[in-house]
Amino acid sequence: MQPVTYKGRIVDKPWGHELIWAHTDRYVGKILHIKKGESLSYQYHRVKDETVQLLAGVLEMDLEIDEGRTTVRFVPGDCLHITPGMKHRMTAVEECDVLEVSTPELDDVVRLEDRYGRAGT
Image (cartoon, rainbow, N blue to C red; front, side):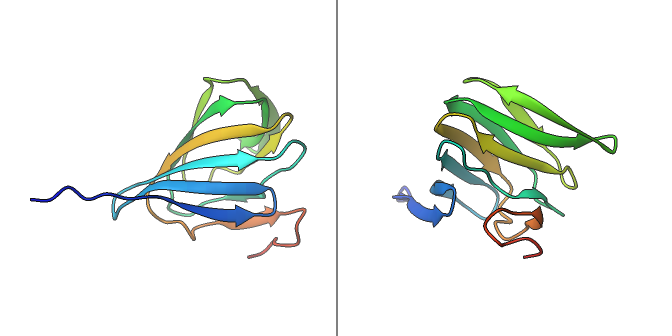
């Protein structure tokens, strides 16, 4: 059996870009590059389950836990498991690289707030 290679692909985003380095029918691996001062949507996923680890930079993560919103500061090495329904948003205090491994539902994003006009998509 021949090994399968995957060169990865870059997906431009208004906050930076994603490097999708693995994509199978069971999981996806990405590195999110978030520009300083930029943020992703305040969002949740219906099915997608993901774990993130901050590789470089300083990140603030807005989370809704038990119906209360809180902000947690991440430094390199910090990790978070984001389960379906968990509301969250990443904001780069410094330029950041975030490792994300998730289930493969890439389009499973419910945007509640978005500074780039994508809320509700």
